[in-house]
Length: 75
Image (cartoon, rainbow, N blue to C red; front, side, top):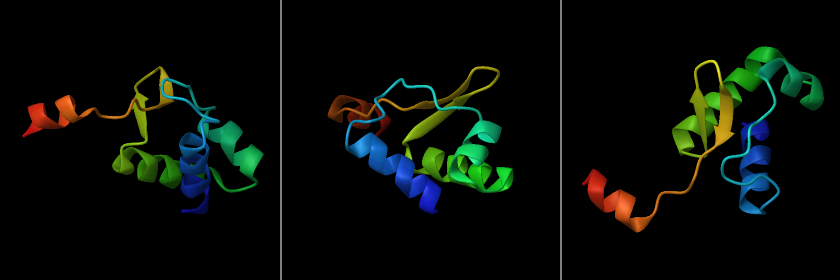
């Protein structure tokens, strides 16, 4: 949860911008000094919060924020 919160904070303060590609899970595990599965859980949490999106064979990216128009179309 701390890793997910840290990444979410970087998105909020503009360090990570929408469309930015996140490093691979193994690289992030090394960077944060945590287990690979911890990063995997953090990525799942970020996807559930709508902060990140994972594209198969491409990687994980910071999601573009939904606009009010997008939200209205989902209703």
